[in-house]
Image (cartoon, rainbow, N blue to C red; front, top):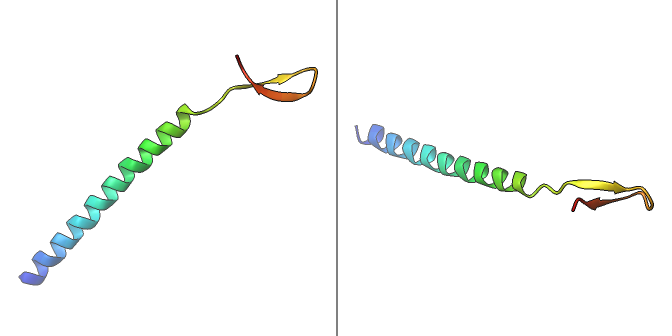
Length: 52
């Protein structure tokens, strides 16, 4: 019985840390999407510059 409880606790801890990691990853991905810069091509120099 002790081993079953120990395994259950370990299993719950692993699930908890995976859940926290998943939330952190989603937050970083959301922040990354917000930092996208729109570019436009300058016809004179053929360089890409941020839109104004």
